[in-house]
Length: 385
Image 1 (spheres, rainbow, N blue to C red):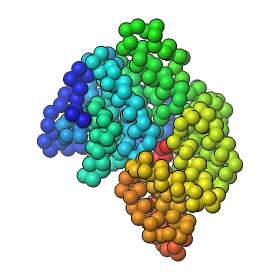
Image 2 (tube, rainbow, N blue to C red):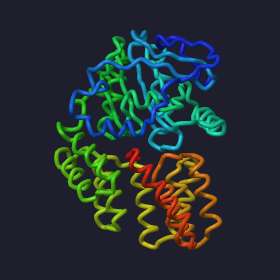
Image 3 (cartoon, one colour):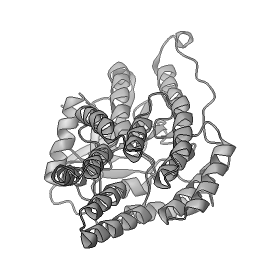
Image 4 (tube, rainbow, N blue to C red):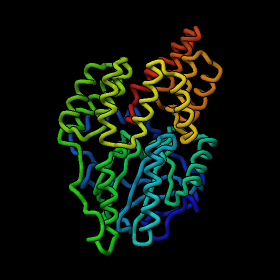
């Protein structure tokens, strides 16, 4: 059954939750940025070689599931994801292939859906349909108040952990960067293949160079406050320290687009593409560039094709809505913005673009309100997706 607990996985205890009450609702995105600022002041508890946090969440059937130590599985994958984020869905699909192959040998996968602070009934149905459509059979948990998202200090989706039976974190991968993702799957293969000489050797684990995360996190903090020059300086320093790390390049591309420096944006997107050739983030940003470069009809056609493949991608819908707004097709534009808002209420890009369209309509006060909403969301937290 989709979302059920694997029989030979780990020590996950399931009981029907009758009237469970989550105390101390966490303002997660603010807390996430508090963490971002202090990330390098001490070794993070979710770094490699540290112990994982225990937690309890509900699954899709409303059962209370506890992720506790010690684990019975030989190797456990813990992945944080969201239904509206493309790379998250791709990671679930890839992990399912490994789960099908190795679940009987001791591989456990637990996924935590960090959708937003409140998952409404319609959104839960969307998640269930997505899981069924992608044929995901490992454990799906709902982090409705984003408490566990905060506990594990997640700043990008997906974020994937490999955890040993002793509850020790062996590897942490943010997003799906090419080298780190290959290492992740190589470790899984080598753990369970009996004839290890036939499997792909595990290369030296890729981790961002020392100091890189600190500069990236400072860049994100400055970006959230619209201090672009400081953000660029920190991001460029991070990219200089580690030329293989895509996250600083993603931020630099986004800043370049915001500043209408399209040639710079293209350069950064090309660098990202070389590191991650199938990056859908790059694909989307290139389509947004086309709108900015007044190639609106071409962008609309390609965004509609993208939307057909990824109907739950809120950013793609927002870009498409903005493109229609630029063409002054305001009814279609606002309808698409409404769909995007229903999927994700936490992405600052959606109200920012909607503000621009409302301004084109002459709705100055509504435009201002959307802009203020965008600024508030941006200051609460930035995700590089």
